[in-house]
Amino acid sequence: MCGALPCAGGASGLSLLFASKVRSVEFNRNQWFFIGIFLLLLGLQFRMVTEYVLNRETTQFLAENTATDADASLYGLASDLGATPQKVIHPPVWLGWCTLSVGSVFVLQSLAMRKP
Image (cartoon, rainbow, N blue to C red):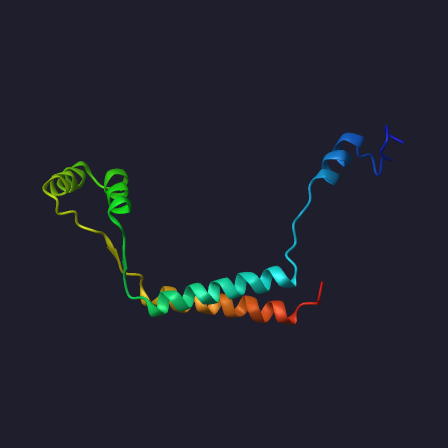
């Protein structure tokens, strides 16, 4: 015995202690099903909606944090004049198909698994 833990094959008790603390999380059938349904609905939304128009606060946040100095100053000038342009995002067509495909694979995989 090496302390409270048995020594197997020359391994110290400390390494066995740390090895027992590492746990892997396994998803069960219900969790895979939920992720699949979520991705299916998200993919359906991407397929049905052609563009997303961001509100003024989000557009201003993106302009201040991601744009160059010239773009930020242009946005500041436009907002001072009262005409605030709103950012429009056009998701690509393949994004909807991709999330629909991955979601359907997850749902089918969850249905093939054992019940918990």
